[in-house]
Length: 188
Image 1: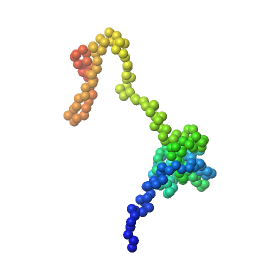
Image 2: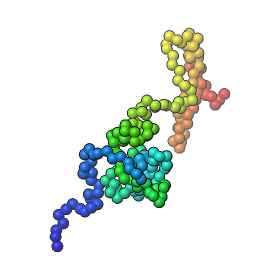
Image 3: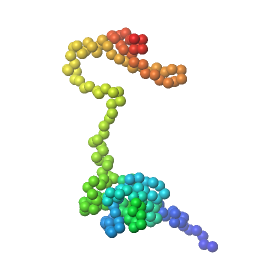
Image 4: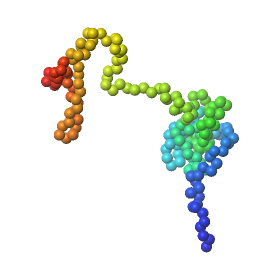
């Protein structure tokens, strides 16, 4: 009986990307194939994709690609349409971001297609913060505050204090302060 000299069988080799960095020739769609963008990964080698012909299809990742080519949400893929089931398809290949940009330049993909690397660059400028307190912050210069405003600020203001009860829960108490004397709002 021969001695096992290897490091495992077929399953060990499945996860390796042996020719990952090689530049390959760009593959265009043929008859019975369509470009699509992954909407949702469903598990068990299946995914939901929006084809660029306008239909959503349930796609099956074929065995040659499983555990070798990792497909994520918003990736551009090439699918093979089924003659007997229009709402199902098979994933033939996954395009890298550079290949997808080249397909867009050649006019194969519509201009509305978003390639996964372009999301992060556009979203940086669109960050908005909601005002939690309910009042918008007011910016004033020190020169803009009149003497009457300064006297109003000195006469009355509100303080917020956190108090803790026996169970350790915190409670927010607002106190109206007039001058240096504190008046509890609940007493009024």
